[in-house]
Length: 165
Image (cartoon, rainbow, N blue to C red; front, side, top):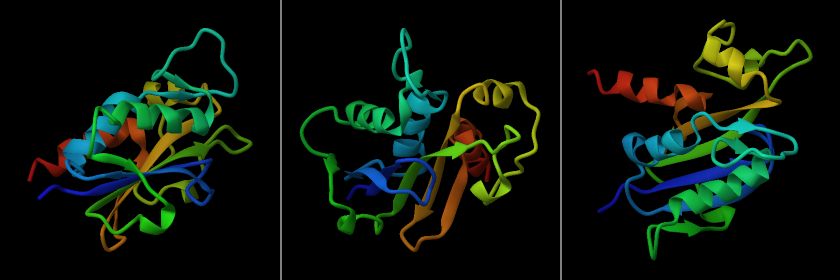
């Protein structure tokens, strides 16, 4: 039996409307679907408008990203399905992709995240802040318990830390 998961791509922040609901029938665990999302979109920059930028390094907003997520996951018949929202959220792992917006000071507010210290000065974070929003990921289990809620580009470090035990 497979490890089922869902992926929601939000219009903006975690509380905004869902653009697309995706059901994955197997490989839904953190090292499967979670790392697929990280490997493909972990360094994607969200833009408002584009010219010579290419996917998946860039997305022209969350709607563009949603289409890229579906295209990257669907490899053939089965496993990946688009589903109505009423069927979502009770799988072993539930992923939500959203944009963490900067406030008027150019920072992401602490209320955007539950598991991270926002005040960091890493070069990678500075590079991501050159753009309007930072792609973020929330993961819950089938009971709604939050497993991860932070920037997507940090997800690999989180998964590696979980495997150290």
